[in-house]
Length: 488
Image 1 (spheres, rainbow, N blue to C red):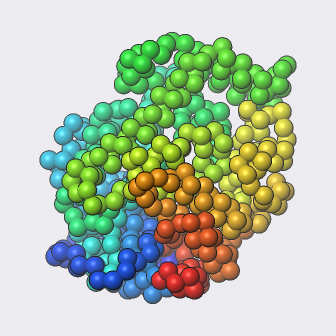
Image 2 (image 1 turned 180 degrees about the vertical axis):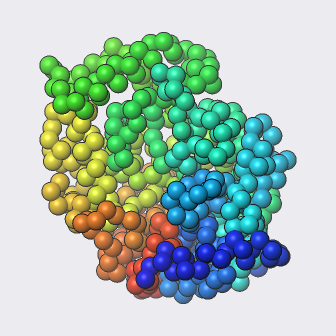
């Protein structure tokens, strides 16, 4: 029985149990004297943290996996990050801690917009921190940007991107001042209001241009973004012709629709794509505008954290698509990120990566790399990314090797090298869900991935993706590997 099955048997009464409970209080226990322990972190959804077995759960992950830090999905409007069934009636999500409104100046979200009502509205962060401290576990709120705007909170639409056709999307805009004010406020709120160990933020998406080209493991989005009023204002200030950028995005949309329909351009797919960029260089300028917005947000969050407590670390979840796409890899420049990072967590889920890179090859073959077969597109990606992995016909069934974990870890370590240490805590695959008929995690594979992280120079590890998904034997295998390495 995996952790998800266990949690389902205990979480049903969590809301009723907590609704009338008195919150635990007190300061986090001081860290024991001695050598600094290796960071061994565990992400977790909210439901188990609201249930009666909190002490048992923390003890289990400590004993099996040697966990030293908990990374709860503390703000989310996604059911699976809350730990409730998909399409749960009445679900809305939000902040599972308590919003303190003095930190959200400039945001348009109210207390009711932010506060999650599930589990009796109890402050989960206040509940967890003192219990985790008893086990020698620090708590890092993990804010992973949602992949859709919550329908139950309509005001989120005012924070959303707008595509080049003027349609409001489901994702927040990095140049939207209301979004930035909310996100910066969240960092300060957690840092000032709770005895946290640090914080991690991430967004599993890439630029609107790359998405419109289908260069993503999930297939991408239909139209390029963002052309909201704030992006247009920023573009004009930077001397970018907004109208020409729109026209270029329109040409990309025509190109992709024709490619998806099986049409072969006279001069080939890649040549046609390159010609669009030559005719509309504003598209590249718009791409750079989007990427700069993401980096600016990270720099702002870093400064916000340091203004509260310079000793509190803040870092970034790096979406796995970065290790499949040479285009996004160029944009996620570790040499730039290191200026405003204490740590990064590259997702290197090698088991599920087989199915994911297979899907990326299929999507890339349907557009920019349409001159190649999907098999040839994957071979090209391997050459461009420096991988030696299973071929297209087998990779979904085999996954990627532990060598992929080691290479991506080393690439991050080398990219972040400098006068100041930026920690690299890769996220390794322990039972990340996969479709039927593809590779599944094994204890041997988990142990190999753990050891690959440290062979690549990683300074810590994040056992991923969610405690409730993990089979006991696979979590124990991670702990065994850490103990064999003297890391736990």
